[in-house]
Image (cartoon, rainbow, N blue to C red):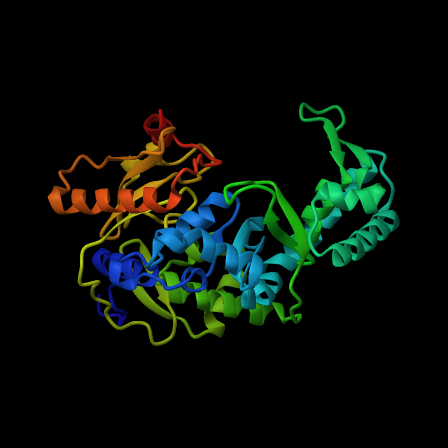
Length: 394
Protein backbone atom coordinates (compact mmCIF):
# COMPACT_ATOMS: atom_id res chain seq x y z
CA UNK A 1 0.00 0.00 0.00
CA UNK A 2 1.44 3.33 -1.03
CA UNK A 3 -0.24 5.51 1.61
CA UNK A 4 3.02 6.36 3.40
CA UNK A 5 2.14 4.53 6.59
CA UNK A 6 4.69 2.03 7.84
CA UNK A 7 3.59 -1.57 8.28
CA UNK A 8 4.35 -2.98 11.72
CA UNK A 9 4.40 -6.77 11.59
CA UNK A 10 3.73 -9.28 14.35
CA UNK A 11 7.43 -9.92 14.99
CA UNK A 12 8.05 -6.25 15.74
CA UNK A 13 5.01 -5.98 18.01
CA UNK A 14 6.27 -8.96 19.99
CA UNK A 15 9.73 -7.41 20.20
CA UNK A 16 8.24 -4.21 21.58
CA UNK A 17 6.44 -6.21 24.27
CA UNK A 18 9.61 -7.99 25.34
CA UNK A 19 11.49 -4.73 25.73
CA UNK A 20 8.88 -2.22 26.86
CA UNK A 21 7.05 -4.56 29.20
CA UNK A 22 10.28 -5.57 30.91
CA UNK A 23 9.96 -9.25 30.05
CA UNK A 24 13.20 -9.96 28.22
CA UNK A 25 16.06 -10.72 30.58
CA UNK A 26 18.13 -7.67 29.68
CA UNK A 27 15.08 -5.39 29.95
CA UNK A 28 14.05 -6.34 33.48
CA UNK A 29 13.33 -3.60 35.98
CA UNK A 30 15.33 -2.54 39.00
CA UNK A 31 12.29 -1.70 41.15
CA UNK A 32 8.49 -2.09 41.23
CA UNK A 33 8.07 1.60 40.42
CA UNK A 34 9.97 1.10 37.16
CA UNK A 35 7.72 -1.83 36.31
CA UNK A 36 4.54 0.15 36.97
CA UNK A 37 5.77 3.12 34.93
CA UNK A 38 6.65 0.84 32.02
CA UNK A 39 3.20 -0.76 32.03
CA UNK A 40 1.24 2.37 33.13
CA UNK A 41 -0.83 0.23 35.51
CA UNK A 42 -0.84 -3.17 37.20
CA UNK A 43 -4.17 -4.94 37.66
CA UNK A 44 -5.04 -4.75 41.35
CA UNK A 45 -8.36 -6.61 41.55
CA UNK A 46 -6.50 -9.73 42.69
CA UNK A 47 -3.81 -8.65 45.18
CA UNK A 48 -1.46 -11.47 44.17
CA UNK A 49 -1.42 -10.24 40.56
CA UNK A 50 0.46 -7.09 41.55
CA UNK A 51 3.31 -9.01 43.15
CA UNK A 52 3.44 -11.73 40.50
CA UNK A 53 3.48 -9.15 37.71
CA UNK A 54 6.33 -7.30 39.41
CA UNK A 55 8.22 -10.53 40.15
CA UNK A 56 8.08 -11.62 36.51
CA UNK A 57 9.82 -8.38 35.52
CA UNK A 58 12.16 -7.61 38.40
CA UNK A 59 15.85 -8.20 37.85
CA UNK A 60 16.22 -9.58 41.38
CA UNK A 61 13.02 -11.54 41.90
CA UNK A 62 13.97 -12.39 45.50
CA UNK A 63 13.21 -8.75 46.39
CA UNK A 64 9.68 -8.83 44.94
CA UNK A 65 7.64 -8.87 48.15
CA UNK A 66 9.80 -6.52 50.22
CA UNK A 67 10.24 -4.00 47.42
CA UNK A 68 6.59 -4.01 46.39
CA UNK A 69 5.45 -3.56 49.99
CA UNK A 70 7.95 -0.73 50.38
CA UNK A 71 6.60 1.02 47.31
CA UNK A 72 2.95 0.51 48.26
CA UNK A 73 2.94 0.95 52.04
CA UNK A 74 6.14 2.68 53.15
CA UNK A 75 7.24 5.11 50.44
CA UNK A 76 3.80 5.49 48.89
CA UNK A 77 5.34 5.64 45.41
CA UNK A 78 2.70 3.19 44.17
CA UNK A 79 -1.00 3.37 45.01
CA UNK A 80 -3.91 0.97 44.56
CA UNK A 81 -7.00 2.81 43.34
CA UNK A 82 -9.90 2.68 40.90
CA UNK A 83 -9.03 3.49 37.32
CA UNK A 84 -9.97 2.50 33.81
CA UNK A 85 -13.27 0.64 33.31
CA UNK A 86 -14.06 1.10 37.03
CA UNK A 87 -11.39 -1.49 37.82
CA UNK A 88 -8.82 -1.43 40.64
CA UNK A 89 -5.23 -0.92 39.48
CA UNK A 90 -1.86 -0.06 40.98
CA UNK A 91 -0.41 3.15 39.55
CA UNK A 92 2.68 5.27 40.12
CA UNK A 93 1.47 7.86 42.64
CA UNK A 94 2.39 10.74 40.36
CA UNK A 95 -0.20 9.44 37.89
CA UNK A 96 -3.16 9.55 40.28
CA UNK A 97 -4.36 12.99 39.18
CA UNK A 98 -4.28 11.95 35.53
CA UNK A 99 -6.16 8.72 36.21
CA UNK A 100 -8.78 10.41 38.36
CA UNK A 101 -9.51 13.19 35.89
CA UNK A 102 -9.35 11.06 32.74
CA UNK A 103 -11.39 8.08 33.90
CA UNK A 104 -12.62 8.45 37.47
CA UNK A 105 -14.77 11.58 37.52
CA UNK A 106 -17.41 10.37 35.06
CA UNK A 107 -17.60 6.92 36.63
CA UNK A 108 -17.86 8.33 40.15
CA UNK A 109 -20.71 10.69 39.26
CA UNK A 110 -22.67 7.82 37.77
CA UNK A 111 -21.98 5.55 40.74
CA UNK A 112 -23.03 8.19 43.30
CA UNK A 113 -26.32 8.71 41.48
CA UNK A 114 -26.88 4.95 41.38
CA UNK A 115 -26.13 4.55 45.08
CA UNK A 116 -28.54 7.33 46.08
CA UNK A 117 -31.24 5.83 43.86
CA UNK A 118 -30.72 2.37 45.39
CA UNK A 119 -30.73 3.74 48.93
CA UNK A 120 -33.96 5.63 48.32
CA UNK A 121 -35.59 2.52 46.89
CA UNK A 122 -34.41 0.53 49.88
CA UNK A 123 -35.75 2.92 52.48
CA UNK A 124 -32.37 4.34 53.51
CA UNK A 125 -31.74 7.98 54.49
CA UNK A 126 -31.29 10.67 51.85
CA UNK A 127 -28.35 12.36 50.13
CA UNK A 128 -27.84 14.91 52.92
CA UNK A 129 -27.50 12.10 55.46
CA UNK A 130 -25.02 10.25 53.22
CA UNK A 131 -22.97 13.43 52.84
CA UNK A 132 -22.76 13.81 56.62
CA UNK A 133 -21.62 10.20 57.00
CA UNK A 134 -19.10 10.64 54.20
CA UNK A 135 -17.52 13.74 55.74
CA UNK A 136 -17.41 12.12 59.16
CA UNK A 137 -15.84 8.96 57.75
CA UNK A 138 -13.12 10.92 55.94
CA UNK A 139 -12.35 12.83 59.15
CA UNK A 140 -12.04 9.55 61.06
CA UNK A 141 -9.74 8.15 58.40
CA UNK A 142 -7.52 11.22 58.55
CA UNK A 143 -7.17 10.75 62.31
CA UNK A 144 -6.49 7.03 62.11
CA UNK A 145 -4.26 7.12 59.03
CA UNK A 146 -5.42 3.67 57.90
CA UNK A 147 -8.41 1.63 59.03
CA UNK A 148 -10.67 -1.24 58.09
CA UNK A 149 -14.35 -0.68 57.45
CA UNK A 150 -15.12 -2.24 60.85
CA UNK A 151 -12.69 0.12 62.60
CA UNK A 152 -14.20 3.13 60.85
CA UNK A 153 -17.65 2.02 61.95
CA UNK A 154 -16.50 2.05 65.57
CA UNK A 155 -16.04 5.82 65.27
CA UNK A 156 -18.87 6.42 62.80
CA UNK A 157 -21.67 3.95 63.68
CA UNK A 158 -23.89 5.13 60.83
CA UNK A 159 -21.63 3.17 58.49
CA UNK A 160 -23.36 0.04 59.80
CA UNK A 161 -26.71 1.20 58.42
CA UNK A 162 -28.24 -1.29 55.99
CA UNK A 163 -30.70 -0.92 53.15
CA UNK A 164 -32.57 -3.36 50.96
CA UNK A 165 -31.13 -3.71 47.47
CA UNK A 166 -33.10 -5.12 44.56
CA UNK A 167 -36.37 -5.66 46.40
CA UNK A 168 -38.39 -8.41 44.73
CA UNK A 169 -35.51 -9.41 42.44
CA UNK A 170 -33.60 -12.67 42.40
CA UNK A 171 -30.56 -10.78 43.74
CA UNK A 172 -32.44 -9.07 46.59
CA UNK A 173 -30.28 -8.53 49.65
CA UNK A 174 -29.15 -6.20 52.40
CA UNK A 175 -26.30 -3.83 51.58
CA UNK A 176 -24.25 -2.09 54.26
CA UNK A 177 -23.54 1.62 53.85
CA UNK A 178 -19.85 1.15 54.72
CA UNK A 179 -19.24 -1.24 51.83
CA UNK A 180 -20.94 0.90 49.23
CA UNK A 181 -19.75 4.28 50.53
CA UNK A 182 -16.08 3.33 50.81
CA UNK A 183 -16.12 1.93 47.30
CA UNK A 184 -17.71 5.16 46.06
CA UNK A 185 -15.11 7.28 47.88
CA UNK A 186 -12.46 5.20 46.14
CA UNK A 187 -14.04 5.88 42.77
CA UNK A 188 -14.12 9.58 43.61
CA UNK A 189 -10.39 9.57 44.38
CA UNK A 190 -10.86 10.37 48.09
CA UNK A 191 -9.63 7.07 49.57
CA UNK A 192 -7.34 4.28 48.40
CA UNK A 193 -6.67 0.72 49.45
CA UNK A 194 -4.00 0.48 52.14
CA UNK A 195 -2.03 -2.34 53.71
CA UNK A 196 -3.79 -5.74 53.74
CA UNK A 197 -4.77 -7.39 56.99
CA UNK A 198 -2.90 -10.58 56.18
CA UNK A 199 -0.07 -11.60 53.88
CA UNK A 200 0.52 -10.10 50.43
CA UNK A 201 -2.06 -12.41 48.84
CA UNK A 202 -4.84 -11.23 51.19
CA UNK A 203 -7.90 -9.51 49.73
CA UNK A 204 -8.84 -8.00 53.12
CA UNK A 205 -7.37 -4.54 53.36
CA UNK A 206 -7.42 -1.26 55.20
CA UNK A 207 -8.52 2.05 53.72
CA UNK A 208 -6.30 5.13 53.62
CA UNK A 209 -6.72 8.77 52.56
CA UNK A 210 -5.89 9.27 48.90
CA UNK A 211 -2.66 11.13 48.21
CA UNK A 212 -3.35 14.80 47.46
CA UNK A 213 -3.34 15.68 43.79
CA UNK A 214 -4.32 18.68 41.67
CA UNK A 215 -7.57 18.80 39.73
CA UNK A 216 -6.78 18.50 36.02
CA UNK A 217 -8.68 19.34 32.88
CA UNK A 218 -10.38 16.14 31.72
CA UNK A 219 -9.33 16.39 28.07
CA UNK A 220 -5.72 17.16 29.00
CA UNK A 221 -5.67 14.25 31.44
CA UNK A 222 -7.05 11.89 28.81
CA UNK A 223 -4.35 12.97 26.38
CA UNK A 224 -1.66 12.43 29.02
CA UNK A 225 -2.93 8.95 29.90
CA UNK A 226 -3.25 7.91 26.27
CA UNK A 227 0.27 9.10 25.55
CA UNK A 228 1.62 7.02 28.45
CA UNK A 229 -0.27 3.94 27.35
CA UNK A 230 0.68 4.18 23.68
CA UNK A 231 4.32 4.56 24.68
CA UNK A 232 4.05 1.27 26.54
CA UNK A 233 1.65 -0.63 24.29
CA UNK A 234 1.70 0.98 20.86
CA UNK A 235 0.95 0.28 18.16
CA UNK A 236 -2.70 -0.25 19.02
CA UNK A 237 -5.99 0.17 17.21
CA UNK A 238 -8.72 2.61 18.07
CA UNK A 239 -10.75 -0.35 19.36
CA UNK A 240 -7.87 -1.35 21.65
CA UNK A 241 -7.71 2.18 23.03
CA UNK A 242 -11.44 2.44 23.58
CA UNK A 243 -11.50 -0.94 25.34
CA UNK A 244 -8.51 -0.26 27.62
CA UNK A 245 -9.62 3.22 28.68
CA UNK A 246 -13.35 2.61 28.81
CA UNK A 247 -13.89 5.98 27.09
CA UNK A 248 -16.24 6.96 24.31
CA UNK A 249 -14.77 6.75 20.83
CA UNK A 250 -15.03 10.53 20.52
CA UNK A 251 -12.82 10.92 23.60
CA UNK A 252 -10.26 8.47 22.20
CA UNK A 253 -10.10 10.33 18.89
CA UNK A 254 -9.77 13.69 20.63
CA UNK A 255 -6.88 12.40 22.74
CA UNK A 256 -5.15 10.85 19.72
CA UNK A 257 -5.29 14.18 17.93
CA UNK A 258 -4.10 16.06 21.02
CA UNK A 259 -0.92 14.00 21.36
CA UNK A 260 -0.19 13.99 17.62
CA UNK A 261 -0.38 10.20 17.42
CA UNK A 262 0.90 8.74 14.14
CA UNK A 263 -0.80 6.06 12.09
CA UNK A 264 0.78 2.75 11.11
CA UNK A 265 -0.60 -0.30 9.36
CA UNK A 266 -1.33 -3.46 11.34
CA UNK A 267 -2.72 -6.79 10.22
CA UNK A 268 -6.07 -5.88 11.79
CA UNK A 269 -6.18 -2.36 10.31
CA UNK A 270 -5.00 1.11 11.29
CA UNK A 271 -2.87 1.36 14.40
CA UNK A 272 -1.46 4.29 16.34
CA UNK A 273 1.86 5.07 17.98
CA UNK A 274 3.04 8.14 19.82
CA UNK A 275 4.62 10.96 17.83
CA UNK A 276 8.09 9.92 16.64
CA UNK A 277 7.67 6.23 17.53
CA UNK A 278 7.38 4.95 13.98
CA UNK A 279 10.99 3.75 13.62
CA UNK A 280 11.45 -0.04 13.45
CA UNK A 281 12.12 -1.77 16.78
CA UNK A 282 14.33 -4.85 16.78
CA UNK A 283 15.35 -7.25 19.50
CA UNK A 284 15.61 -8.14 22.23
CA UNK A 285 18.82 -9.88 21.27
CA UNK A 286 18.13 -12.87 23.51
CA UNK A 287 15.20 -15.28 23.46
CA UNK A 288 12.96 -14.96 26.50
CA UNK A 289 10.29 -16.81 28.43
CA UNK A 290 7.89 -15.50 31.05
CA UNK A 291 5.28 -16.87 33.42
CA UNK A 292 2.71 -14.10 33.82
CA UNK A 293 -0.11 -14.13 36.38
CA UNK A 294 -3.84 -14.04 35.93
CA UNK A 295 -4.99 -10.56 34.84
CA UNK A 296 -1.44 -9.54 33.94
CA UNK A 297 -1.45 -6.14 32.18
CA UNK A 298 0.44 -7.54 29.18
CA UNK A 299 -1.95 -10.43 28.59
CA UNK A 300 -4.93 -8.07 29.10
CA UNK A 301 -3.41 -5.09 27.30
CA UNK A 302 -5.26 -5.18 23.98
CA UNK A 303 -8.72 -6.05 22.74
CA UNK A 304 -7.28 -7.55 19.54
CA UNK A 305 -4.98 -10.34 20.74
CA UNK A 306 -4.45 -12.67 17.80
CA UNK A 307 -0.93 -11.35 17.22
CA UNK A 308 0.23 -12.73 20.56
CA UNK A 309 -2.47 -15.22 21.59
CA UNK A 310 -4.03 -17.77 19.28
CA UNK A 311 -7.84 -17.91 19.44
CA UNK A 312 -7.54 -21.69 19.84
CA UNK A 313 -5.92 -21.19 23.27
CA UNK A 314 -8.56 -18.87 24.71
CA UNK A 315 -11.08 -21.44 26.00
CA UNK A 316 -8.43 -22.95 28.27
CA UNK A 317 -6.84 -19.69 29.39
CA UNK A 318 -9.83 -17.38 29.99
CA UNK A 319 -12.84 -17.62 32.27
CA UNK A 320 -16.37 -16.96 31.03
CA UNK A 321 -16.13 -13.26 31.88
CA UNK A 322 -13.04 -12.71 29.76
CA UNK A 323 -10.46 -12.73 32.56
CA UNK A 324 -7.16 -14.27 31.55
CA UNK A 325 -5.52 -16.86 33.78
CA UNK A 326 -1.80 -17.54 34.29
CA UNK A 327 0.03 -17.68 30.94
CA UNK A 328 3.32 -19.01 29.62
CA UNK A 329 5.08 -16.77 27.08
CA UNK A 330 7.85 -17.48 24.61
CA UNK A 331 9.36 -14.61 22.61
CA UNK A 332 6.28 -12.42 22.74
CA UNK A 333 3.47 -14.91 22.30
CA UNK A 334 1.36 -16.98 24.64
CA UNK A 335 2.04 -20.70 24.20
CA UNK A 336 0.38 -22.16 27.30
CA UNK A 337 -0.48 -21.75 30.95
CA UNK A 338 0.77 -22.52 34.43
CA UNK A 339 -0.48 -23.10 37.96
CA UNK A 340 0.77 -23.74 41.47
CA UNK A 341 -0.06 -27.02 43.16
CA UNK A 342 -0.81 -27.52 46.84
CA UNK A 343 2.79 -28.57 47.53
CA UNK A 344 4.09 -25.34 45.97
CA UNK A 345 5.28 -26.87 42.71
CA UNK A 346 4.92 -24.64 39.64
CA UNK A 347 3.55 -26.70 36.75
CA UNK A 348 3.01 -25.61 33.18
CA UNK A 349 1.75 -26.88 29.84
CA UNK A 350 2.27 -25.84 26.23
CA UNK A 351 -1.05 -25.68 24.40
CA UNK A 352 -0.34 -24.58 20.86
CA UNK A 353 0.45 -28.09 19.61
CA UNK A 354 3.96 -27.20 18.52
CA UNK A 355 7.26 -28.60 19.67
CA UNK A 356 8.66 -25.38 21.09
CA UNK A 357 12.13 -26.89 21.30
CA UNK A 358 14.70 -27.47 23.99
CA UNK A 359 15.69 -23.80 24.30
CA UNK A 360 12.14 -22.73 25.09
CA UNK A 361 11.56 -25.64 27.45
CA UNK A 362 14.76 -24.88 29.37
CA UNK A 363 13.87 -21.19 29.60
CA UNK A 364 10.36 -21.95 30.89
CA UNK A 365 11.73 -24.38 33.48
CA UNK A 366 14.15 -21.69 34.64
CA UNK A 367 11.30 -19.18 34.99
CA UNK A 368 9.21 -21.69 36.94
CA UNK A 369 12.11 -22.28 39.32
CA UNK A 370 12.68 -18.54 39.62
CA UNK A 371 9.00 -18.03 40.48
CA UNK A 372 8.93 -20.79 43.05
CA UNK A 373 12.12 -19.45 44.58
CA UNK A 374 10.66 -16.09 45.57
CA UNK A 375 7.07 -17.22 46.23
CA UNK A 376 8.36 -19.76 48.74
CA UNK A 377 5.72 -21.24 51.03
CA UNK A 378 2.98 -18.85 49.87
CA UNK A 379 0.10 -20.50 48.05
CA UNK A 380 -1.49 -18.65 45.16
CA UNK A 381 -5.00 -19.23 43.85
CA UNK A 382 -6.21 -16.73 41.25
CA UNK A 383 -9.44 -14.97 42.12
CA UNK A 384 -10.82 -15.76 38.66
CA UNK A 385 -9.99 -19.37 37.91
CA UNK A 386 -9.67 -20.70 34.37
CA UNK A 387 -10.00 -24.24 32.99
CA UNK A 388 -6.31 -24.95 32.49
CA UNK A 389 -5.28 -23.41 35.82
CA UNK A 390 -7.81 -25.60 37.65
CA UNK A 391 -6.65 -28.70 35.82
CA UNK A 392 -2.96 -28.08 36.44
CA UNK A 393 -3.47 -27.13 40.09
CA UNK A 394 -5.19 -30.49 40.72
